[in-house]
Image 1 (cartoon, rainbow, N blue to C red):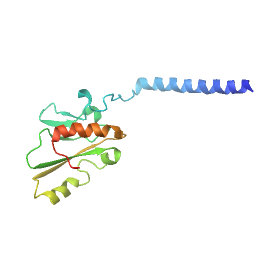
Image 2 (cartoon, helix red, strand yellow; image 1 turned 120 degrees about the vertical axis):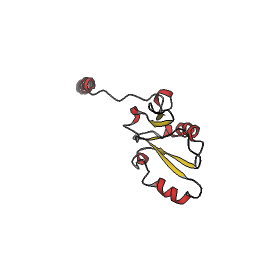
Image 3 (cartoon, rainbow, N blue to C red; image 1 turned 30 degrees about the vertical axis):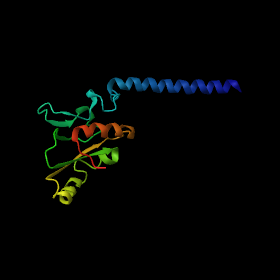
Image 4 (cartoon, one colour; image 1 turned 90 degrees about the vertical axis):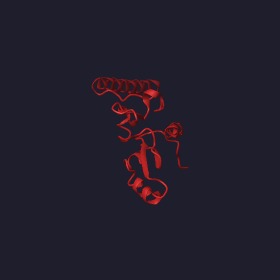
Length: 148
């Protein structure tokens, strides 16, 4: 009884070792994506960084463009502007840059209070919800205006 179980375990371990070896060989040509150890909130891994062409404009970090919408917006919010960051996962990301026209609808609804409405899509594909609290705190420093 012990011998067949040992043989099955040895074969299973051998197959898994072979699969792992093959995956390591494939990584030579197709490297894995870099791990974001700072969860997007370390200076070198921020979602929005100053544009090299114009530091007064923030752009999506090029390394984050696989998971986030490519966007650009002014670092300083102009007076009379309502700026909304939509934080979340893939359901937010798939809404697109204008969040399916949310910015236009808000401009129509709140045009009497704000000259301009900006929506920033900060929804990430496969982005863990544990990052949202830190994102809210960091983006609050950028905008100074949040809706609750």
